[in-house]
Image (cartoon, rainbow, N blue to C red; front, side, top):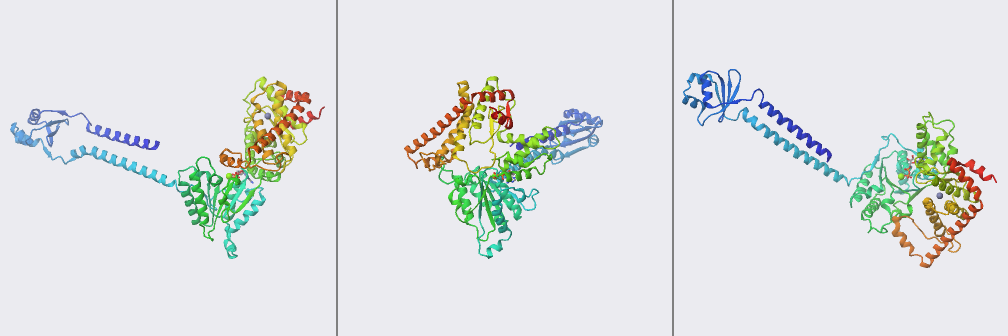
Length: 604
Ligand code: ADP
Ligand code: MG
Ligand code: ZN
């Protein structure tokens, strides 16, 4: 639109310039004087006239001294009129009368502006039309897929398995897919069916997208990639036609990989939404199913898809002949984290003191994406400190930034807020240190980070895959440590504990309804998806248990919380001196590191 306005403005300016030119060319020199026929007659008699040009009734007179005049003649011809005025014939001849019938230059001069204007109009209309057409083309390409395509060899950052650390089992599985793509004949000759759909499952940031591209890179085939959410954003019917285009394109370029990222955006179980059913999504999903079924057995296109919510996928997607191969990407363990860090630090200037093993050991729960982010933050920090190389210090400091967002040093607490925050965090730390089944306190701080006013960082000393009930119970008490400390010390509560309480009720409910850890309710799980989007489904599941069970669950949850509160309160009142000590140091220094805290706790 903006461009159109610009073009119109330009055309307008050109028009102005040209009409100005015409005006100027007409008035070149002095403006001709208008004289009467009588004056002309006397000028001719005096022999002053060099020439007279007649166009219709208009006369253009040029005098011997170069001056120009205009005049109007009567109906009859100029020669006759002059004769009537009694001008001698030789004088008339000397006046060089030239009659033009109006089709000459003068006519052109008068018509050129109109022609010009006409041309302008045509040009303008033509431009509008072509614009419209472009718009049309755009509107039409809505349907065409907006897939990103990576051609083998053409992509400078070709990704292969080398670029993906960890996820060993997934890589093994996918090597088979690479084999299929490279030599399908080997398998079809055996009578084996080429797998059609491979579903990559794993938490966010575990490298699903990366791995899918690596498969294409390894196999050296074109890679068509589109994200599930992109299907949804368009008008009704467009998603389905995009799917059709995408499959057509992939088939034409077979062998190829067609990758639908975040397929849960379109592949959610149908008929569960509360919002009156999402027609567009269902149509898109149906089209994917239709296309996958429509593959000839020898079509060498493998459809890959990625999701971090396999639990919500429509069962129809998982049927044989569709996404029947499922590849799980595990969260990275300490070895994987070390390897991932090495990959992302490869292109960076590292100091010799960087020990990846130590960084990996301090980052349990980090995904591949977090680690790549960590390496980047460390580089930024080193650059900001004008260092030549990234040292271990930058890496370790960046861990907290990646975990909890940047420090907000400008967010200053006043004296009283500082005291409350100090006691709150000291409460968490003290309860944690006093219980047996908790992760070691890594750092306590009352510097705001992200949304938190302060934080107590606890990190497991090793990767763990199972958690025990005792650990959960202690964790509940730790979560309440801040709340209870505020209450005991200030006999007053603040909003500082809001997020603790949220986690507390979520965790205690999980204990009862998901982990079967309540003695009274026993080993039953009541599935819970915990996301508003699935409200419809959750309501449906609630029906599976009675009002009575529901109130029993509530009672059990309340009991877990009450026990945790008692534990926290006991520790905080019994060890009040220690609490004061920790809080005092926090107020003074704002942070306490692991070593200092451990020393502090060992002291009587
Ligand atoms: P997902 O699709 O599973 O959410 P991505 O594949 O988009 O995760 O990963 C995001 C980024 O994190 C990748 O571009 C890569 O830089 C990094 N990453 C994740 N997992 C790994 C891994 N296993 N090895 C190396 N880098 C990884
Ligand atoms: Mg992804
Ligand atoms: Zn807290």
